[in-house]
Length: 74
Image (cartoon, rainbow, N blue to C red):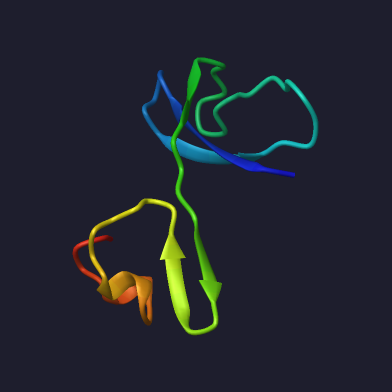
């Protein structure tokens, strides 16, 4: 079950939505409007003591110990 990120074109707030099936009616949880657009989201994974980000940043410090330690990639 993927989690998608959206931006409401009415109230301009970002939100996440867990989708269980195919096409669902996506509405903004803040204003209830259905004028939303899917936005690109990133993720990170950990293998051993290394973090890898899907954002593909050029900073090497965020792929070593902790991505939150890097002020450049936040």
